[in-house]
Every structure is written in C-alpha cells, then in structure tokens.
Image 1 (tube, rainbow, N blue to C red):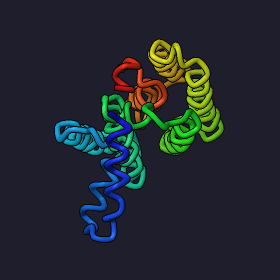
Image 2: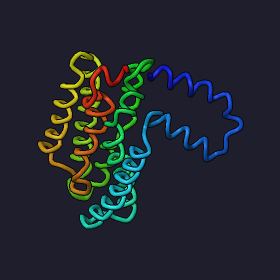
Image 3: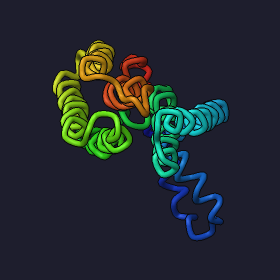
Length: 209
C-alpha cells in the first residue's frame, strides 16, 4: 500500500510545474505528515497545535517571561503539541517507518529537535545559564541515545518506545522540569520517541500493509 502511494506521488510530481503555490503547500504538508492522513488527522493536528500555541505563552508570561520568551514558547508548543499527536497517527507512522525508510532518516529528523536549548533560554531567569545548559544537554543527549537504542533493536521497537518515552519524562522530573514550559517533556518525548522514533502504537502489519 505504501509503495503504491509513493508511486502515485512520483507520477504526480511530473505535473509540479502546473501546480499553484497553494497546491504545492498542500502536497508538501501531505508528504510531511503522510499521504494517507485523513482530513480528521489534519484538523486535530492543527487544533492541538493551536491550543498549545495559545496556552504556552500565557504560562511563560505568568512565570516571568518576556514577550520574546512568550513567542518562543508559543512556537515550541505548536510544534511539539501538534507533533505529539500527528507523529503517533497511523499515516505518519507509515510515512516514516514504511517501505523505503531508513533509521538514518529518522535519526536526522530527531536530531533537528534541539528544543532543550530553547527551554534553557526560557528558564534562564529561574535556574541560571550553567544549570540550564547542563539540563538541556541531558534532555537532548537522552533523546539521541534513546533513538539509537530503538533503531538498534527493531524487534523491540514498540516496547522500547513506550519505556524510553516514560524514561525521558522521568529524567525531566529528576532534573527538575521547566518552569517556563512545564509541559515540555510530556510533548517532546512522546512526539520523538513514542511516535517518530518507534511508532509504538502500530504493529508491523499496520506499517507495511
């Protein structure tokens, strides 16, 4: 099924020159979240991202953040809250774990999410830069290491995804959660480990059908 969808998309690419910019945006978005995503998937993704984008800056401001801090918090939440949902959908799991996908591609995607550095910036007034940088390194280092563990044990990807996601949230609690973004770990690890790294909600049959 995935191969068939990819073949259709490849044939469609010949008509790219005739597409409007709106159609190009829609195609790029569909390829990003999975060509099998339903309108409901898209609406929920947008809705969850919007809720995160609205709530996060309020929290940041109430905890002493500046207006720029609130903007950063809003952007982070839109990405992570929406991503925590969409990366755990069947369509997105099949997009990144189906035929023709590789562990290296998933690791590169995960590595781009250096969000803990921005969390350290948001928390700079609460815990100091040195402690903030140390916590950011621990959060990000755990993410990269956990992704590699999942990739090295594909037979156990589902259980590892659950366990390592829980481990990331526990690590965040041990380190002391973010003051400006207390929701961070609860969206960051489910998006990138449970969802993108492991596709834990879905069986091999779901991914390859």
